[in-house]
Image (spheres, rainbow over the protein chains, first blue to last red):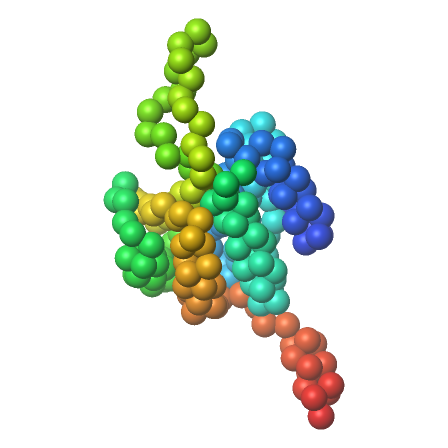
Length: 77
Length: 109
């Protein structure tokens, strides 16, 4: 699966995918120090979106989307 | 798979991150958890009761080491604060962008 180039596209696609099927979605981040990147992945076992973060400012955005998603996951709805 | 409480999970995660720093990687997975530890019954059988509140299952893995924790709704702010701290201190191998820095300095001056 190819990586989404644009952060905004990834953010929207990942959140939409989660909202469509919260019970089957998982969100993964993989950090490789030697290569200096973080791979983000959201999948519902059918489709999958990925993003590769290599720059420091991306970390802030990742933090934001992660806490958003965890907030959605641990909720009453 | 070792199930830990939230703060121990972050502590162990830091250890895993340190071990993985040199030549390997680690992954963290987030998933919604409904509290059921058994499979979904086959059609025709009684479905499992719907949970009143959902939780978040956090798993981390590096090589053969695996740990996990369950985050309930009221613990979300605490663990996210710890987690962002963890990200800042351990995921520090990303490229720093110089342009942004010089711009920020220019606006301050």
